[in-house]
Amino acid sequence: MKLNDFKLERFFARFEFTAPYLLCTSDCESFTIEELLALEKNAGEAFRKLHLGYTETLGNPELRCEISKLYTNTTPDDIIVLAGAEEGIFIFMNVLLEPGDHIIVQSPCYQSLSEIAHAIGCKVTDWSMDAQNNWELDLDFLKKNITRQTKAIVVNFPNTPTGYTMTGEMFNKLIEIARQHDIYIFSDEVYRFLEYLEKDRLPSACEVYDKAVSLGVMSKSFGLPGLRIGWIAARDKVLYKKIASFKDYTTICSSAPGEFLATLALRNKEYILKRNLGIITSNLQLLEIFFKKYEDLFEWVKPRAGLLIFPRLKFEQEAEAFCLDLVNKKGVLLLPGNIYNYDNHHVRFGFGRLNMPEALAKLEEYLEKGII
Ligand SMILES: Cc1ncc(COP(=O)(O)O)c(C=O)c1O
Image (cartoon, rainbow, N blue to C red; front, side, top):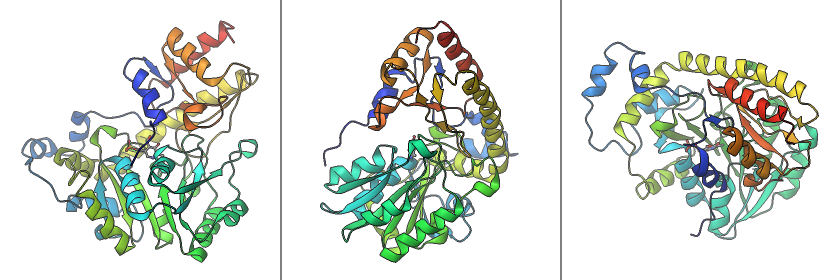
């Protein structure tokens, strides 16, 4: 299999650990091990005594139990723990798809959601969100593009990079379309639980459709990407077994310290999510003021969930040139839309970090210089 460069990761590799103001990151503010261990009495001692042998291939049973509680109708037997969400995408695509198959992928998207299928030799149809209409998706387009070769519909709500989330009504229709055609839904739910109002939280796809695979991770909503713990929730037993067998060729099992800390974090998820949502909603208020002030330069869609937005630049300079000049002059990193194979006139903002107000102030300094 020949994979093209992962444009987003290559772009981040240049700046992520050198630019002081990351204004486009896709995760929430993280925690230290010390902070996590302080969440429970005796956790520190238990962590120090942790055995560092191989762990169970499907994932630590206690962790799978905590993960299964995130869904209404899954059991630990429906959960496989993986090395981040990325391993879940890689394995799902590899076990499901053959050359010549067809998948439909919400677009723009996190590149691996379409790239791996391309590399396998599949036909990939982009199901584009409409920038002119608040990033809405068109279900008629979806219906018209399903063929006998279509194996899966790939979606991501809340979405990266746009922040878009469907309504519950549309989501039900989407599930019905997949059911009628008996095709899989691969639902990337790495930003789930970051809805500003609980009523906007969609059901997890695996809760409502037995041929749905839900992808979760500790990296985004929980702010713990360094754990490298993700998972797949799937009630389809045939697919589940294939995913478990494939894992023998990728990571075999997860890291024991990662599993320990993920279990601890999930037992304390209310605290962690409340803290993270607090940071996000307070940053969002600042962004509202910012986009009002600079409405001649940016057009944005205020999201109902998550920590990402994908505003359009209303000036002539291309997004990549703008981002490079900004990071070189002010150390503020934004992500240009062309790395999503999208146009070069949108940029991704991420607002899950505690230092977002400072990063935004630096961006303002840059804009006030009248460079654009
Ligand atoms: C939508 C989406 N899915 C999956 C991933 C991969 O997550 P992880 O780094 O935890 O493997 C990302 C990371 O940015 C993402 O944005």
